[in-house]
Length: 374
Image (cartoon, rainbow, N blue to C red; front, side, top):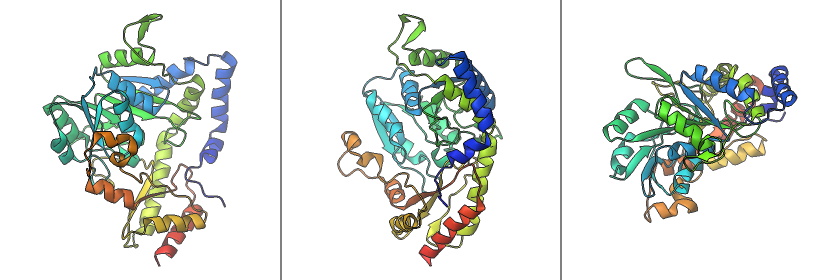
């Protein structure tokens, strides 16, 4: 039996007829760029998220870059982001001539520390990029309060938490990606809502921002051949939209399956003292883009090696803090360190979790983990 981190083939086979018909329609009408499926998916996604505007684009990294371009930030302006995240979050900040200011994360939920926002705020701070890591929301109510107090933009990196619900203290519920000024997501194939290539989108309830985002993503033009601003060329292929509009119908079902897998892992790994299973935040649902353990006492790498020997895949998201990456050394002082981030980089390990619940596979993984610690 071959165990995979993500079973895209199994997922496809369950919706094969729907997907194949949708793709074939695109081929038959030959509208490969901005075809009908793009608009259909956009509208369906707006309805699902409860957001006014969805602007599809080419990938999640483009989404982050376009979001930052929409705020007219100037070289040297600072953007706060977590140090424990994928490179794209900070990469686009540097590419635009801005300064990424990396802060620590919470040890239990992996989201950006509110204390870090206060500590690293300067007169040059213009925006915050909270990352909804592994599948649940950062503490958006507190982040929004801080941002409003200091007149900062909030750009949500929602690549890993599509479908997650965040509940405010007054009972208001919003989908992640729709809470800040702009939300960004990726449709990379392994994402909870993934296409069969690259894709991404931006979300906003602000009409003016939506107008500007669309213009930036289309070479800075409102009218063809008339360019108001410097933009880029970033659009979602029609065939990818055709796939996404089918998979969107199943997204809540996929989230429920991932949660069943997570619950099963939790119940069966709870007795291992050297493992900490994922914490579920009280104000957010979890869609388990990743099921990420923390392994204590320096045994993480040994566990990964052991699982590999048993043909069980695992991944470490992420093995090195962003500020220790060579590309970002220019933004931090020598000796800069964030204790929680450094600890997590040595402890986290993600196990297979996907939409196709298979108890037999889970039992094999759990048995081998128990064998390693016994």
